[in-house]
Each structure stands twice: as structure tokens, then as C-alpha cells.
Amino acid sequence: MSTGESNVICAEHEKLYKTLDAFIEEVKDKPGVLIEVLHKAQEMFGYLPTEVQSHVAERLNLPESQVYGVVTFYNFFTMKPRGKHQIKICLGTACYVKGAEKVLDRFKEELKVDMEEITEDGNFSLHGVRCLGACSMAPVVLIGEKDFYGKVTANEIPKILKKYRG
Image (tube, rainbow, N blue to C red; front, side, top):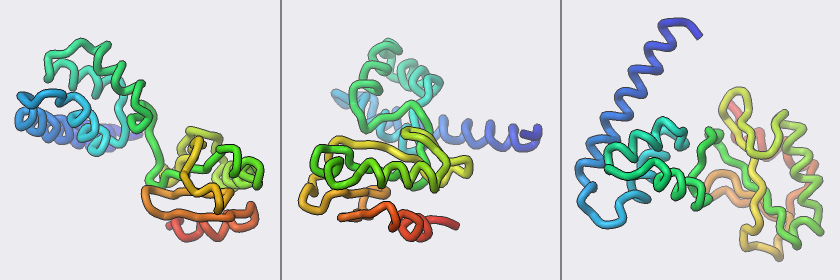
């Protein structure tokens, strides 16, 4: 990374921290504000690295251990970057029996990543989940928050991914 790129990234992070601080000022006196602030921080940064957690703890006058405990307890929060398109593959019993492992393997092959990893271009990340609540349509895949695919076969994966590429 060149110095110019590094300065742009630093300037962008500074701007994000200032925006987060303004949000914290607005809500800091509300009870139970930590989860709301963490949601906002993750929305802004894309994930919650330790630096962001420390910043939130300092601004809310909380121990870092308390912030970390909340981040690691709730599975909505993540400490690792996620792709622009998060691919969730149900690995629950019904989906597994109907071939979810083959679907997962094909996603890994096509994206050249393993579970909980992000593609080199930052476009995709792959996540196994216990249930997506559509057992009758097993195996199922959710991309993002609303693009749901049922009765998915491994051969359909390239076509599904094409919709989200470039």
C-alpha cells in the first residue's frame, strides 16, 4: 500500500470515528445504549475490530471487557471483516441431509475461500449457519439479508454468483 493510499484510509477512519462520536453523544444517556452503539459502529466500519471496541468503551466510560463480552456474545456482531455479499449456507439437519455440504464445497471452490473468510476482492464472505427456517426447501442459501435460494444444487452456484459479480 502506498503512502497516499494509507493517508486516504487514515482520513476515512478519522471521519468514521468523528461520525461515531457524534452518534454516541446523541444517545449516550439512554439506558442500555451499548448494543445500539455497537450496531452503529459495525454498520459504519463493517466489523468491530479491537480498536473500535476500545474507542466505544472509552467514549461510553465502560470497561473494554464489557464491550468485548457483548461483541462476542451476540452472533450479529463480528470482529472480522465480512464481504459486501455475505453468503449464508444452512448446515442444519434437513439441509445437510439434502446436500448442503456439496453446496458449501462448491461455494468454497468458486470463491477460493474457506468458511468465515472474505474473498480477495472483498466482494464475498462465506458463513455456515444452523438454520434459515426453510427446511422444506432444503438446502437453502441466503445472500445478504433478503436474497433467498431454496433447493440449491452445487451446479447452480456459478449462476447464483454471477448475479453478484462485477
